[in-house]
Amino acid sequence: MTRTQRKRHEECVLFLEDGFGESHADRLRDAGYKVETFVSKFRDPSTRLKKNSVKDPTIFKRCNEESWLLVTTDHEMVATHIEEIKKCSELAILATAHNRASNFNVWIDAIIKAKTEVLRYYKNQERPCFAKIDSAGRITKKKTITGVDTTRRDRPRERE
Image (cartoon, rainbow, N blue to C red; front, side, top):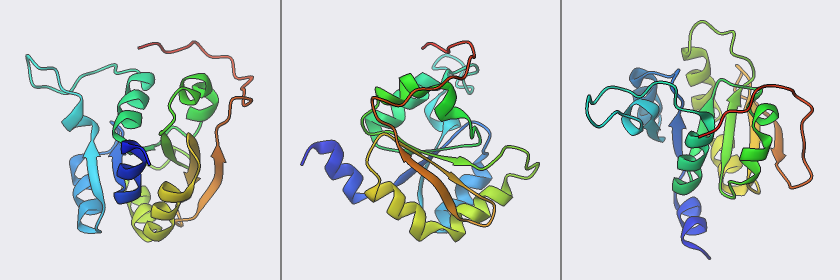
């Protein structure tokens, strides 16, 4: 068993993308999750302010290295970045079913409600992988990303 596989087996750490605030992280911690936030991990060293315009591939790389479960509101992420995701052998992504909710608490409630299923997805799904969570706390569209997966989506590529 590799170091990364051991780390994945031991704990699930949620990495909340930039849209989620610290109060959301606190609610998840109170529910028993281990949580890292964009604000705490992507700061400008000189100003100590949150970095702006961090590209998704940079976030993928960090989550992959740390074996964190990336929680995002970008439900199209897998279509947009499939080639970058394929490069990350330990990347697991959980996206909200849509990003129309004006209140992020809907998604936090869903993640808390689905804790057992979230942990099972994190532990058992072959990587790299992508799934969606709906507002009722159901995880859907679980998918392992393989070398043969492609997308026909035509958007400009984000580079590190």
